[in-house]
Structure formats: structure tokens, C-alpha cells
Image (tube, rainbow, N blue to C red; front, side):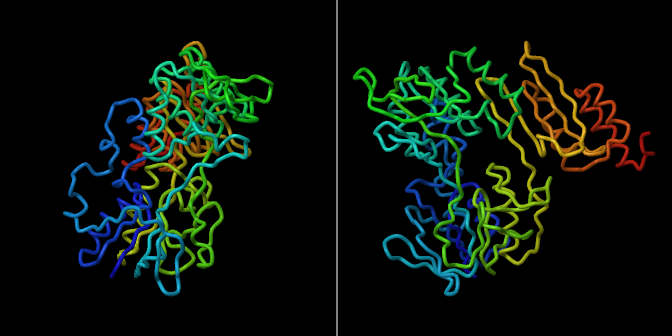
Length: 424
């Protein structure tokens, strides 16, 4: 049996290692379109602030890890198309590789908005190690940097740029920061926090063009309200999209990503998908979504490998969960953080302390939450949502005081575990 994995990020690496464990007699080939050893994009911010060297981004630190594990890694192997009927991959340069089972772990790529000047020298995305090298070269202390986008990825990059002591301006077209993770109140608090740390933040603002600068700075970013922001470096972080174009003509169904079933198998037998490219079951909604976070990628890789090796295992669905550190202010969101129709909610808002907590209920189930400046409840919130434990009388107690999450979790899980009477 020959297992081929396209993509050497967390999903691909976890899958390769589990395939070797589950199917020790098989051949496992891991293909990467980049020239680097398998690495984690989530480690790039630490490289940008000099906390780690490049090798610190590598997913496995031992030099011979993959060879010693019986996993062949082929770098600079860009897959241009897939012959699903013939079970072959066509690589850039003409090479063909056959497979018995195929895992698509090709991840996603940055979206480049249709703004004039995106092709100018000094305009970067921050997605690959190659991108990071270019940013390190230009983002010197005192350099003027414009970051386009203040979503989850943008805010991760924001911290790195601020810690590099650049003169940083952030432009976000939505009315708040991290709009897909935080509501108006929490997003506004994050903005105020960043401004208190010396970062200039423009929300409800669009970039109209990146133009030539005035000589002192090579670039000038034109905003829709007429202002021009001088820049030595412009970084674009407005979102990502799954890498699926090479699947045209294969019969593999795609929407936002590759549609997969509960076994992570695509619409074509023998082809699986995992990570940012997989559109899998959403635990909270029962629909199929792309959850581009590393914990989901690792879960996908493990379960896909099990099924590829003939060990049937179902995926229960991924919980939409994000945890973000923005210059020391921790924010998090879970599940249906925006609420459900007909549901109840409770909010704790302490703006002077940069603390915020919002809980969302459906009947007496906790289905979503968002928090700012509160870290002690992260595991508890996820546990309550994933376990779908009935809160019973504890729902009202949380409506009265949402900080009693730990008490609620212990009371309800212990009651169920010990077959105790249901709380009134």
C-alpha cells in the first residue's frame, strides 16, 4: 500500500506519522510544495520577533526524524493536477507519482485583494518562511509598516510587528478588530488596547491603493477617507482560501474546501482531505465548514490516517475555537459565539479593566462564548460546549454571574459522572 500526502503542514505531518503507526508495512510519501523542511506557520510570529531561529519553526526538530520514522519527504514537489482514475499525481516539471491512498493536506493561501499597487516591491503577505525573511529584512525598528487586515491572522502578525518596534498602522475595513471572532464590544476593546500600546488603528476604513512614496518612504497607502500613510513595508492579511484548483476535473467535490464525510474521505473513493483544505463537519451547527486552526488540522490528520489504513474512525466535528494574544491581551471565542435564534445570552463588561465575557445559550446548553482578558475559563468553556452537558439550574446562576463557569462545570460533570440527581 502506498500512501501519498500532499502538504507538509501539521495535518500532513500528523497523518504521515499515524499512517506509519497504523500501517507499518506501507509506503508513506509526504510532498511539500515549498523548499523548506515541514514547518508550522503558527511559529512564524516567534521567528519574526527573534524568539526562535528558522529551525525553531520546524514541526519536528530532530534532523533525521522523518527518515528514522520511515517517512519519505519530498520538498519543492508542486502538484499541478491529479489523475483520480489512474491514481497518479502530476508534478510541476513533468514527474508523475502513483498512489493507492491520497491525502490532500494542501492548506490555504492568502487572499490578495484587487487593490492597485498590490504588486509593488515592498508589499508582502505573511504566510511562508520566505515571506517572513522578507519582512525581517524590512521591518526594522522605526520602519513605517502598514498592515492591511485586522482579523485573526492579521492580529497575530500585528503583535510581531509591534514588538519589532516599528511605526505600525493597521487598516481594517470592518467596524471592529477580529470581526469573525469578536462582537462590537470586544473588538472595540482590542482596538483601544492596541492604541494604548502605540499602534494606530483605522477601522471601517478601506485601502484604495498602494502608491509610490515621496522619497523618504518608498510606499504610500491611500485610504478611502483621503489620508495617505507613508510606508516602508505593507503587509496584506485580509483572509485565506483553500488550495483546491489542482483538483479540477477529478470529480472531487469542493465548495469552500474539499467536502469530506465523517471519515474525512472526499467524494472520490481513496482520496481524503485534512486541515485548512478540508470542509468537514462543524460540531456546533452540524453543517460542513472549513476551520483553519492547528488543533483541527491535527485531529483531521490523525483520523484521516486511521481511515486510510483501514481502521474505521468517525470524526465528531470540529469546534470553532480561536485564542489570540494581542500585545498581552488574551481574547478567545468558542462555538456559536454570535448566538442562536431564540437563545439567551449574558454579558460581563468591564472596559476599564479590558475584561469581557459573553455566554450564549440554547435552552440550558452552553453553545458559544467569547472572552477578553480572562484566561482561566478557556478549557472549561470548551468542555461545556463539547460535552453538551445540561446546565439545569446552573444556567440561571451563570446568567446572574457568568464568571462561575468553573463551578458550573464541576457541579454538572460530577453530577453526571456519579449519577447524582439532576439539579433543580
